[in-house]
Image (cartoon, rainbow, N blue to C red; front, side, top):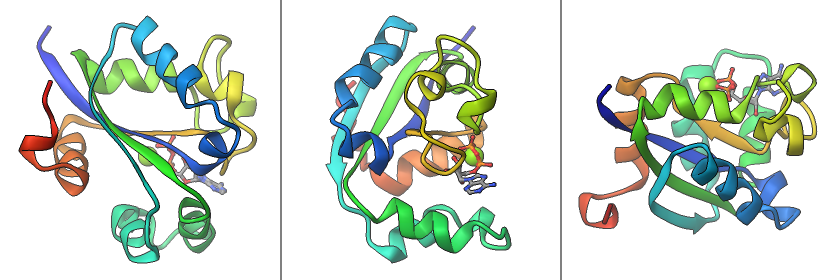
Length: 140
Ligand code: ADP
Ligand code: MG
């Protein structure tokens, strides 16, 4: 299994409740290494561009509003099969459907305020990492 990287975002509902350390423990205990991390306040333009695959969805405007409502922590996670592994650690999109032991089950509030984002494929991970980080900002 190859070592892979994925893009993670700790979302505004989680920074508001001061649980970024708790979430990082899920990643580290789950076998992923945080090889880059920074705290940002996204602009509306950033959020719209980042989520442009969802532009036609009914929840798009609300999602962009929410993602700019407070600070986020953007991260690069590294490990074996990191994209899929992180999706397992995160749990299902709707916390009500998330498995026991996942971030969203433990900390997610609802289908929108679900505490974390994770890339859904290696291709999207590469794009999403490049959206937030330059090479020198990923020290490993
Ligand atoms: P995931 O984050 O699990 O990959 P999606 O890519 O489908 O999920 O959706 C992106 C984000 O949009 C979700 O994490 C959530 O914050 C929000 N979202 C998804 N579905 C809904 C919905 N039905 N209503 C409101 N917000 C939603
Ligand atoms: Mg997604």
